[in-house]
Length: 446
Ligand code: URA
Image (cartoon, rainbow, N blue to C red; front, side, top):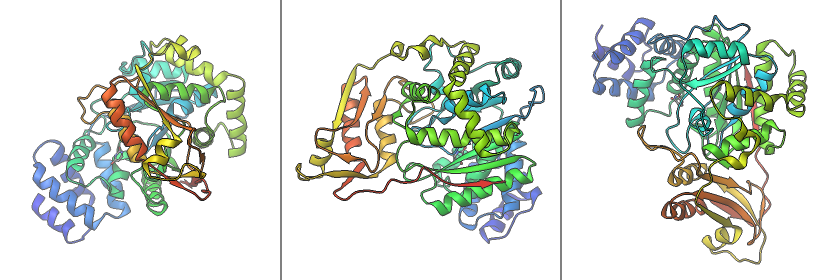
């Protein structure tokens, strides 16, 4: 086989067979295919696309490029979740303890974040003592004992995806549905769960900017799961503004605790409960979504879900007293309040009228968090886990000059000032009432 011929075949719009796809993936992973040929191949694929069979073959080749996690030592049906990513998305921290308290084993490998905030692993590291690197044996034992373990992704899980993703990132080939679907599903298949619930985000803070693309991505991933013999459901949810009130690593842990105590922000609660209900259905512990919701509400109301969060944190070496008393968490040195007047002045509007938050450029909110120090621009950046944003208003809310729209928490005054300018620029105001977006748009079941 010859890489040049395969690039040309894809460039001319022809489908590649399984052996050809495996040849490209393995050759690039072991270094025999150089970056410049792989870049050309990815760009050809970006423009000419792949059919479902090719996308599944690409997924399998990447999933088989490293170790597959063997979860056979865990009793029961293992259920995993994955979000395509967004601002303020802390649902794993809510859903994991809920399911574990209902007896569903959740063995989760999570990534570190590159972008506006950390990933789930970074957030958990905000809890003093919490260890995210434990042996595979300890991971399996913990899931058998506590029903929940969340650890950092091992280096050798789908290494082909890691290398290809790094190249996509610098060759403008990330936002292609086949490439995103195969990248996500290769890691999920290698991570070994029997059933997977995907949270496919759509909106200004997501890879998918419109519902049609989000549905196409969801269908592609569900179809890959089916061909690989896994039970996959996708929930399509809104990411036109941050999810919940808090953006930032420790702030998101705090908000997850509020949710587990039943006091979380409405839209965040809805997404978390919807994901948990489909995971419960996939686990076989509930036979309908209504029954699943009933079970979820019971473990939240009775405090069992919150107790499970503490048990899980202790099992991974964390100090759960911080969850009982969130005031113990490290505070930032500076707070900057964003008032309605700041937005009204920014747009040169009259302070005498009533306005509504009408649009949010969610990527700009992500940038605000990054500027405060809450995210990484490069893998080497060190995150400041204490910084972030608490939103007091959401899209559709009325804004008066004296209203607090948000509070920015930072440790470096210049960064907090810069973040303030970025934040003000992220919203638009309208003098007409604004209809709020739905939070769950659709469910694609496998
Ligand atoms: N997340 C992934 O893991 N891969 C992609 O390609 C996009 C989002």
